[in-house]
Image (cartoon, rainbow, N blue to C red; front, side, top):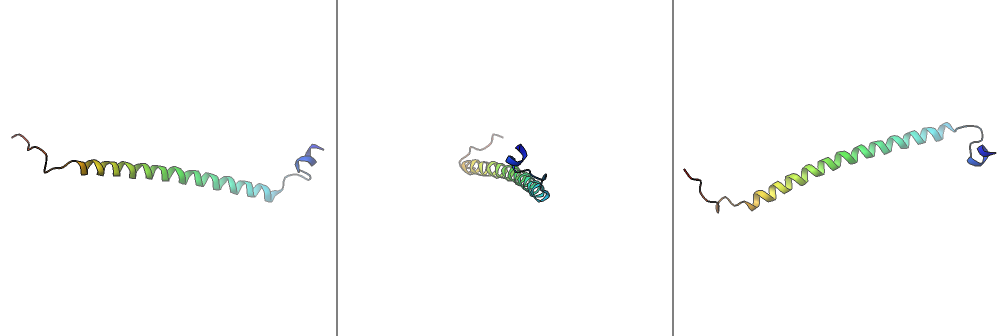
Length: 67
């Protein structure tokens, strides 16, 4: 009776199992892509921050080095 209530009459459907495996693989692929994109975003953010810092440093206004 419990199996009938859960929809498992006759055992597991191979198509359902294949679809579940496919979806699990897709989730893993998307998680990997997310990690890669986050790392790339962090690198771009750091580079942009460095560029803004360098723009604030005005070489023409800096004092000359002592010799």
